[in-house]
Length: 79
Image (cartoon, rainbow, N blue to C red; front, side, top):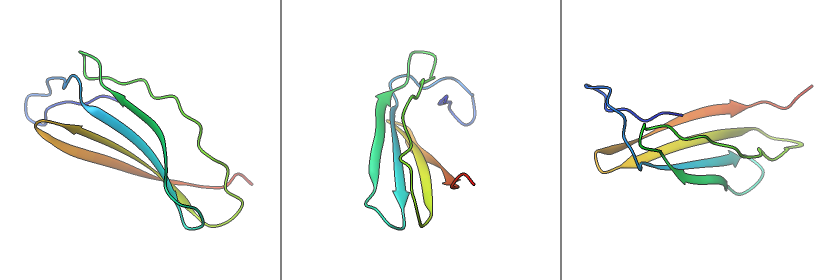
């Protein structure tokens, strides 16, 4: 993941990163918290819990002194 200013594309160091898993059958779980490095990047390593039923999504959010943003991705059960 990399954080960048929208106009200049300069990196945003020390942005707070959180990865949360939400589902229709379990309470939300935070699986990662960290900060971006000086170059605006963050290496995220986490385990996504297995779900036997329902649907789930991963939400990656970034917050800094200039704003916040998030990305959402649906998680599908392996067949």
